[in-house]
Amino acid sequence: MVRKVDHIGIAVKDLDETLKFYEDVLGIKCVSTEVVEEQKVKVAFLPIGDTEVELLESTEEDGPISKFIEKRGEGIQHIAYRVDDIEKAIKELKEKGIRLIDEKPRYGAGGARIAFLHPKSTFGVLIELCER
Ligand code: ZN
Image (cartoon, rainbow, N blue to C red; front, side, top):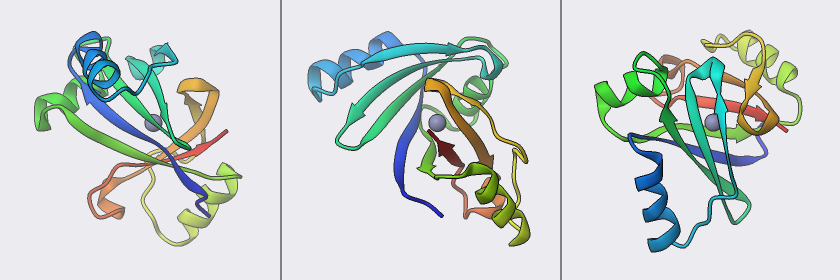
């Protein structure tokens, strides 16, 4: 079902400050940024090898990234796995009794189609399925 790690989503308080670390210290360059209104988040894309780091800064106090940072602090928020056919993957997971946050694919940053699985069904990790 899963092809590879598409990206790792990291929740940060200050995108510009965080980018200094990634770009100047680690040498991983940001290729673009995007605001995803629906998720109240500004995303920076940093490709590395055949995967990507996605830095996520909340654009609103009540956004999911704000809430995440409030509860757990900055850090890895989700891991995204690439799938070829997201509808098929969702259907298979439902049949296997996996709890889903999204039963239908929604728009994801970078024009991907994404769906989240509930961490209660995934041993504590917020998993995103990602079709490109
Ligand atoms: Zn993601």
